[in-house]
Image (cartoon, rainbow, N blue to C red):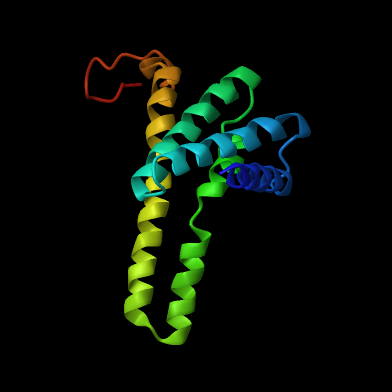
Length: 156
């Protein structure tokens, strides 16, 4: 388990470097990936575990973004990398190349569900907080204060 956590940390850190995350934010992104992987493994490694792990990463990214005053993606993208089902996508393509269409369909469906769990987990973590942050009507673009009193055009 310690080896897996270490590898998750290194993978998240490496992808943060590849995505040009500023140096001072490399550690928060890598820690988000490590915590996400720890949640994933402790919940059994299923699609439900992926969902809860990505939900946790989304909440960590939102909190870290507010704390460090950076965009959420600076922390969320490296954090989510260890959960991406790359092996499932590889297995799907390999089954297609070998002509095993039933196996490809099975593995591809599992991979799509895992990717969907990641997307839904991140969305549930970030969207409500962004709606609350925006404050509803305060951020609706206001136009000139004109009152329409009739539907007829003004006469000149």
